[in-house]
Length: 132
Image 1 (cartoon, rainbow, N blue to C red):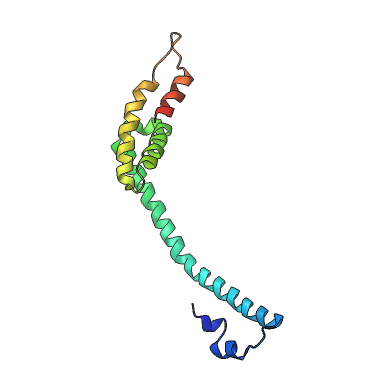
Image 2: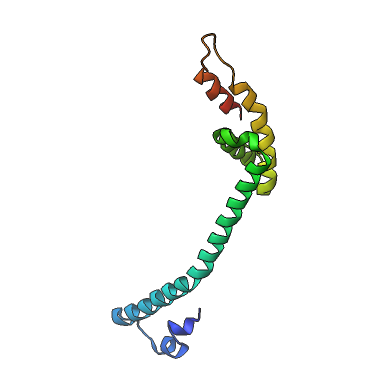
């Protein structure tokens, strides 16, 4: 971005007292220039976001291929990921997934505790998710 597109040195030096009309002109130029620069950046941002989404989808698919026993427990896995990520800021996402898989596998067996009538107590489920 070139400031000369907003106000040149000659224009600046010629202004003794900035009037409303001159100020509006310079401000309009500045806004147009900012919008133009922002619009130029959109394709790169969109490309980056699409590539990141594809990468995350691949990680997700690879994770569940490697951990088929967790496919039916995605809520537990999601909670484990959040927990591991909050405890390890800056850790790579693949390492977070590895640790979350271990945590989820520790919790899942305890989720199948049934009461005397053969039904699961939802409070046990909620308690175990809280342990994550």
